[in-house]
Length: 279
Image (tube, rainbow, N blue to C red; front, side, top):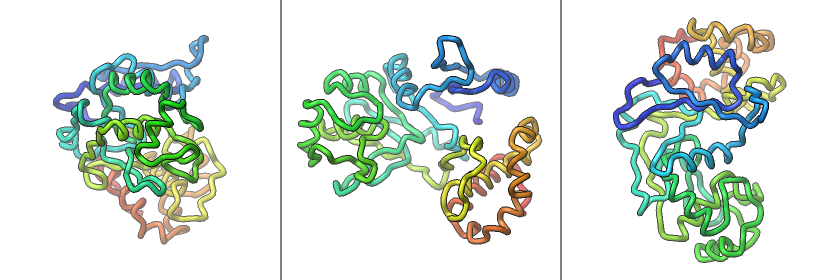
């Protein structure tokens, strides 16, 4: 994690992180502020707030601009942060990742790395009665606003999902109001998203499709565990070696993975954080 980010104060937000891991993080990064979120009145360190709840809390305590970076989003060149900006009078968010909507001809942000303006998000929430939550049916004022950009009741940004995913109602309502998304450079050059890296508790993932995320997640984490600084986690995730042997064995079992963009992205991240011996 980069220590010096001009113009930014970096804070680690812990959500369902064990007390032991919190202690290790504080010892490893003594100068980095850590904030623990809790979804349990009993202060259970394993309790987890949903993604939308985390965003709502951040908007409530950060009325100005702030960034949120998912733990499976990796910035390999700190110069990227110099491009991170937005004008809340013009933009509803800023970020490097987008996805195409179904049948409506525009792109909307993915949430892996975002700059938001807390007060602007709350204004939309209060005006239209929506939140960051996954939503199936919108209040009438919000539904009427979305009609102006072509969304009829029962239509969603990703129609195959059948709902507005986290923050998607906010994206579309902001578009309806005339604001835009500030697309930042860097996707695939100075930062990468490796989906699903936190899902290692699932020991029965299907790896039969070599270009799907479970394979890249397994390979990525097995290579990370080779680093001495992460040795304390090896016993916890020993089942990876029990199932696959080594990261090199995993590549031998799925050779087509070597030709995929997922493998290339994993390799770039690993080589950015330290020398990695190729299998």
